Length: 282
Image (cartoon, rainbow, N blue to C red):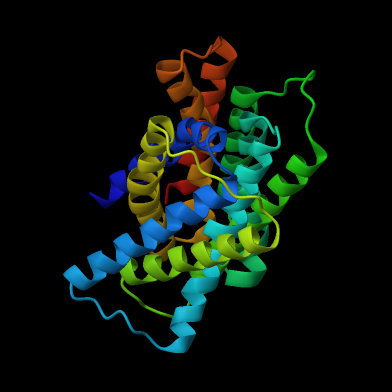
């Protein structure tokens, strides 16, 4: 069963790109994320109570998980949502964030003492090349400077969060750790709202459907699987599967949104798949 977790994660995480734009179209990004992680924190709290997990943990374990949530749910997702709300093309944002495995490979050696083999580097480069082929660059697209900056910040945040999560000293149950991380994301977005944002949410059917998808399938499903994979595997191997997310998102957009998918896109998907296989196999 564990072997299929990466494939489930890829499908669930990729589907988030289909529902991000509808959320942004009906809300301020930080209000939407604060709303999302308030419900996610509550959900993990109730599940922890139901499964009789210890909610009150020592201060060190709490702040380790909380800070991980600030980085991942706060800075990373906040940066991505904000950049798209400012006109950043979703595909370009996804491509920039896809650089994460390369940064993680560079940093996991000196920080985590993980040995990144030549085989893994070959897989990483193939995976990135395939993702670039699928997404491509629209030369005529104007990329907003503030959107580009926010996406780069998001890239740094998700890389830091992944390495930080691997270094955590606690052994908290996933539901408790995820609750604390969701709380960290919620607090971060509340602070941004208070200091900077003009908040609004249009609770339309479109918003509620898209938000429900991101809460249940992405935050409860995909994120829990990701935390499990990081805990069980090396950071460098785990994040290599992220290269399959842009191609899979493109396939989903082709199926559900009727967006075009060229032969070059299909070739890129196959190259990315081979790259991920090389980078993650033992």
